[in-house]
Image 1 (cartoon, rainbow, N blue to C red):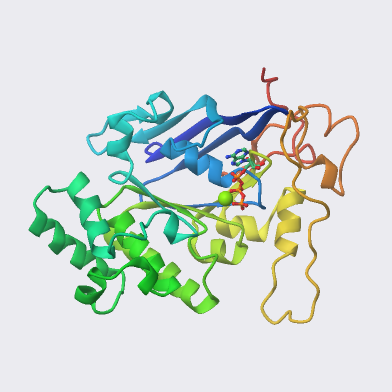
Image 2 (tube, rainbow, N blue to C red; image 1 turned 90 degrees about the vertical axis):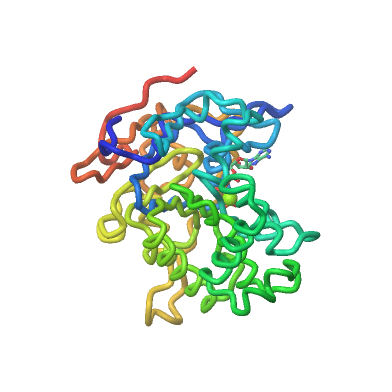
Length: 340
Ligand SMILES: Nc1ncnc2c1ncn2[C@@H]1O[C@H](COP(=O)(O)OP(=O)(O)OP(=O)(O)O)[C@@H](O)[C@H]1O
Ligand SMILES: [Mg+2]
């Protein structure tokens, strides 16, 4: 698979499994995508499609009993070299240096990355002292500057407050301040606005776009909300059952969705002025990928299922032109090679 000449991150055939007593759960089962510098790449899919496990794999924080079975995660480093993150020990110093400094992450729930027992200021200072400067005063200056930049009012007062003293939106801003305090080249955002009301959500999205322009970072934005994707992403990867089933520029994906799953997803979003119209939910649930058969994962829910074709092998992700990729036998006969 070929990617744009200079990517900040390239993920090749990533497979992340969980070894359970019932069998092997294939949370990520052959994922490829790339992110160019300063680009915003969206990852969309229903609950359980493998979005978070993909992010955890990149950061090497997959919880046990999960492990990366195979694949490459190539990160371009500031010195021009490339490191395969899959080759690093998750506990190594090298990955700890990359986490937070070159790649950082914001989550849906700020309290998963903010400690309740330390002030906002102390936590941002700590991140800066770990990666940028040991000098306490310099670190405090940079932290105050960051708190100010993410739009938190009264930075000096907020600096000494604890996370629980802030509103949800302000906590989210504090987490973003911490994530960006070391100017990462890639920010991974996993549903960072899902828990917020729509007004605050719009403000946070706006803030992330502003900071992206200012800091020049790339963003991998994970969400199940197509409205958010339309707002923020340049390109979209649609994930289903551990695989990318469609990829295109955001514009192209909304105009010309090719995969039956993407078409259903688009039908399930409310349209402006379409009030009163019932949304069409997608029939059935995402299956659990426990010992999954080698077939198209969407088989069991697809209106266009072709017996003997879709359930006989895994369709390949094929470029239909202009970088619009789809993994579906309605569009190409090509299958993935059989994977042991
Ligand atoms: N710690 C774990 N142990 C066992 N299975 C897990 C674990 N974490 C995730 N999984 C499984 O891996 C698959 C992918 O999960 P993942 O959390 O990546 O989904 P997601 O796309 O992020 O969903 P959501 O939108 O709900 O956040 C699911 O089948 C899930 O049950
Ligand atoms: Mg998730």
